[in-house]
Image 1 (cartoon, rainbow, N blue to C red):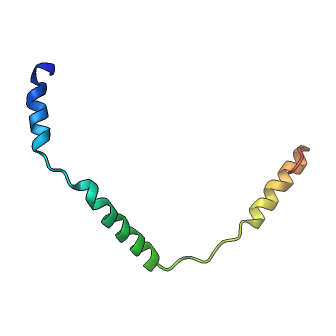
Image 2: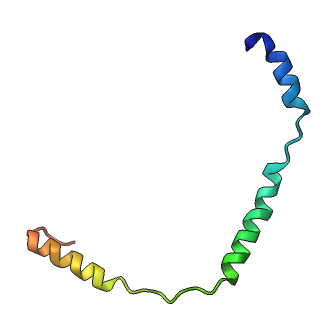
Image 3: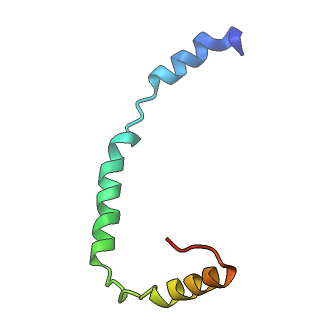
Length: 64
């Protein structure tokens, strides 16, 4: 492979990869699609926290 390194470098130099410049447009489309999508109602996690806090109390660990 080392013997062919100049050939590989030459091949890579001929490639004009512009993909990195397409990323901002792709991300903008993703964000626009996400903004246009109806958002679900926010779920309350209070009951889950309460169950977790109760479990910790049962273990006797201090709750901060």
